[in-house]
Each structure stands twice: as structure tokens, then as C-alpha cells.
Length: 527
Image (cartoon, rainbow, N blue to C red; front, side):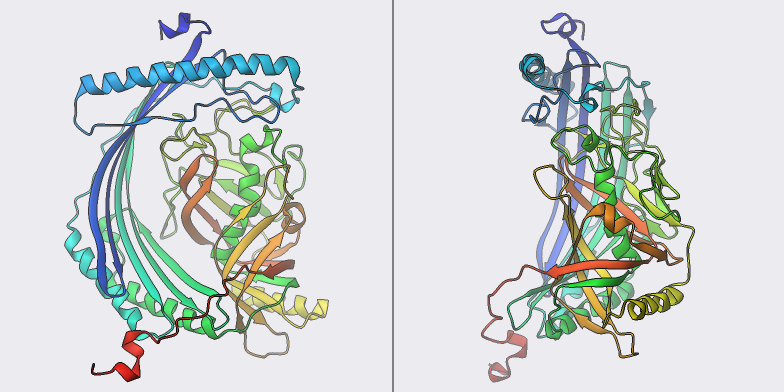
């Protein structure tokens, strides 16, 4: 720092992060083992900021992106060789300084010829208190052979169905340790172990539409791994749902009352609210800044509150995947109230300040090798207008009758979705349901349908919530955005929405296989 701080232009901040990743993965398909491997790797990231906390090389000029270098880090040996590590840090410092200095010159030139918004006048980097923490090294001990037998057994069960074209089960164990030091005095060592089992099956309807069902188990204590009985029961559910979806009728575009079960509601809030509340989106002139000017305003019904709490490891018996002690900028994770009784109060903040929000609240996150930005952790939706799920269903049917609709839609599971936040695109979202039922007000049985996506705009859709159930459900997943894929969780009770719009899902036109699956080919029996 003594050297680069005197260079021209001068650096004012340095940081180094080493991420040590030990990952085991076992994958099976259709009753056989596809792969079984363990891999250990380390990645070094150096960051040099040139200029000052108020204005530095990362500053957005007009519609240009931030001045981070295109390459962020390099692989380093897993040997405990200090000399080799020092050499890698030396290379990173040199390359990052050169890239930062070049970007800073463009920033200063650009400011002279382009208009800067009020939001862009906020500092580029927040001044934070140094953090010092040395946690225990995270590690696991694993014999992969039992899991090799398990993935064979789990995928073998799907061979009994002619509707299942392919089945994949993947088990992963991962220990990730992170080491951070900065010129501000931060010194951190922390890590975590995570286990995941993913079940995935594919089928195809007669009209060519691809049908997929997915489920995952997450745990952090090896003693709490799911029992075979529970996994096989979930396999049976996925198979039955896939068989039903293959035969289900196509749904038509529709707008009317909808009820989302808890996991579906959690994904809905993640896509519709969570991404738009990420702090950096309020500053970037290329963003739609949907929520930027709405702090203190009623954004949702007054019985809804939302927090993001990466400090929580569990909700009830459920592991929360978005749990971490420190973010990727060395700031302690914090529970943040984003919405209080319908009123927007805060944003998920990294060290990129906003006017009125000068500090990070521990949400600067990234996939290894990418620069961090503000991201979601554990998004938890709370309600003061709760009824039992049974009562919520009755209210749902009553709303269908009141609106004179022939049916409402029950959204039981969602795979994910995406949302447009940039100004060059409509401020809209699309959420991808997997299991959807028509619910009829005349007492007919619910009818499974397929081929729809939920669409809408956020400010209108969030105001359509009428009531919630009384039991929160958790969705764990990996969210992809500007800083890559990061583990997240979302939790919410079931939702009753007065109006939701669905459109036809994009589909394949390829016919199903000409020949039946070998195990179901009656002509080839005995051959």
C-alpha cells in the first residue's frame, strides 16, 4: 500500500481474498453411476481501487458499466507454499492497479462530457469499520461409495415409468473456506460445509412440450442427511406428477384470482421484489430504479413485512442456504428490515453507497471470480393477515365466484424465473410454474394443467395480495445475476392474489420418442 498509494493515480484501497473449495460430487442416471469425483481448488482475487472513496475507478459514467477489470482473480496452488502465494498476489496487484488506473482516467474524462444523475453523486465506496475474525476451518469427511449406491437406487425407481425419459440424481458435499485481508485492517477467516441432494426427471407430452420435475434436499450436519425412505417417497411424488403433467391439458392465457403455495410464493417474492430491492440497481442509470424513490411509501399491502436475514441458519427445521457470517466485501452479515407493514424502508446494500444509505448492511456478494454487488441472502416474508391454508383456499374460491371467473389458478410449485430491471426493457417479470391446477368454484375436482408462465409488472402485482396462509415454506436455490450465482433462500406463507396473469410457455415441437423405452417395449421382451 505504501508503494501503490504514491503511484499516479494513487491507490487508496487494496484487498486480497483466497477462496478454498473442496467439493465432492456423485451423479447417477437411470439406475447407473454417471460420475463420482472430488476436487480441491483455490482462487485468489485481488482488488485495487484508485482515486478516493468519493470517486474511484468503479464509477459509472453515463450508461457505461463499472470500471472493474474484466478478469477478477486467478487459480493458485493448494500447497501451503507462502512464496508461491506471494508471487500470485504480486501479479494480481500489478494487473489490478494497471486496469484500475486506466479505468479511472476514463471516469474523470467521462465526467466532463456526460451528465451525472443525483444518484450517481453518491460516493463510490463506503468507509467501514475493519473486521477481524478467525473462525475454525470448515471440512468434511466423506466416503463416496454409499452415495454411489444411493444415486443408483434412487434413479432406478424411475425406470418403472414409461413417461420418464431421463432421470438424474446428484449428491454434492462442499467445504468452502474464505480468507480476506484489506488495507483498512480487515482480517477474516471463515467457512461453511453444505450438502445437497437434487432429484430431476424429464418427460415429454404428445404435443412436444418438455416436462420437468425437480426437488432438492439441503443440510449442513451429515447426521441429518435425508433417509432413503424420505427420498424414495419424494421420487414417487415427482414420478406421479410428471406422469400426470404429460397427460394434462394445455392452459390458455388467463387473468384472474390465484393462490400460491408457500414455496411458490417465496420464489414470487424473490423475483418480483427481491431483485428490485438490491441497492446497486437504485444507482445505475441503466436500471429501471423501480423502488429508488419509494422509500417511506406504501409498496405492499400493510399486513406484509419483509426482512433479509443472512445471519439465520435455519427457519424451523429448514436449512437456509443464504446464511453467511461475512459478505464478500468483509462486512458482517446483518438482518435488514426491507418492508415494514407494507412501507419500503431499506435496500440490500453492499459497499456501493446510495444517497441516504451511506453504509453496507452486509449484502455484497459474488460468485468466485466476479466483483461483488448487493444481492439477496435469506428473504423472509412475514404477514399479520394470516389465516389457515384451508381457510385461504375457501377465500380463494369465494374470490373466483365474486369475479365471475370460471376458475382460479393454484400454483403449487415454481422452478424459478427472471425479471427485467433495465430501462431498455419493460419493467416486467416472468415466473415459471411447474405444477398448476385450475380450481373450480362449483366443487369440481382441481384440474392439473400445463404450459403457462406467470407474467406481470411489480408495482401492480405486489398490491394485488389479499391475504396469506399461516405457515411459512422455504425455497433454497442458487440465484444468477450480475455477480454470478450465489446461494439464496426465500421463505413465505401461501398467498391469495386477486389477479394474476399467465401466458403460454415456450415449447418444443419435437415429437416424443418413436420407440418406447426398452423396459416398456413389449415386442422386445425376452430378447
